[in-house]
Image (cartoon, rainbow, N blue to C red):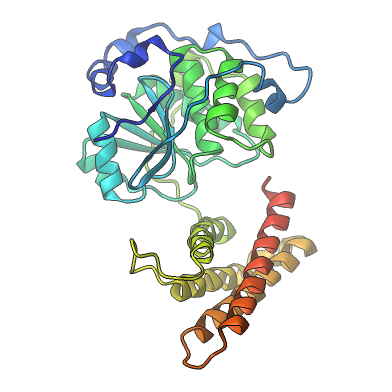
Length: 342
């Protein structure tokens, strides 16, 4: 079993995560709270710029089957991507993880985690930053539940590292410039998400008293419906389509059950379902235009990939059609994200 990547700055990292798991339920929560030792940063520029001032040694993420972009930030906190399957959750259990904190929108597989002796907590956050209530819930989770913690969003690059950084301040007492440096230099959190950096760098982190007074019940499931639910599903389908394009629209030999045409069809269905929502009538014109472009582009992509299996069909024709359709969908998503997500 390969251990997750180690962040070499912390002396305690010479200990195994399994030992940390044995002691976390007592010693980790008996120690005094460390958040007050890390006051908000006084910034001259952006929080992203401040994240370059503490120079960290280069560390590459660990990559395991079903677990990607993994960084062990301390004995108590690991940051990474969403566990892809039950086997990935089992791997986390073998690492000694006791609590998994998801800040992604998708409802996590809490039942499998529980069967493996782990607890799932679901606090969905947005790319624009972490609001007051979310900070209370995240801080309370780190303070009151058993570690080690595995913290994730979808890809493990933006929202997850920001939540893990809050844990680094609360549990490990690192200065905030260190926490945002880890986000930028190790986890590759994008400069587009200044709100995430700013939250960690300057926001008021709830005190232990404020955490205790909060009635958050560590819920494992926070469900969404409507447009937000559609976007959660669309992101996952788009990632599969994107990977299929990178393989020249060939089936992945490691996942022969994942058919590019089927995935493109499901992507189109999600676009269509989002456009059919009554709530879209209240959205701005530009949003509805981008959504329509996504519907049309995904429909053309389905048609192109359908042609590739037809005998005698010109390969150049369907590949050109698929490429243009893919680019249309990619542009509609990028333009919409720039206006409404990033």
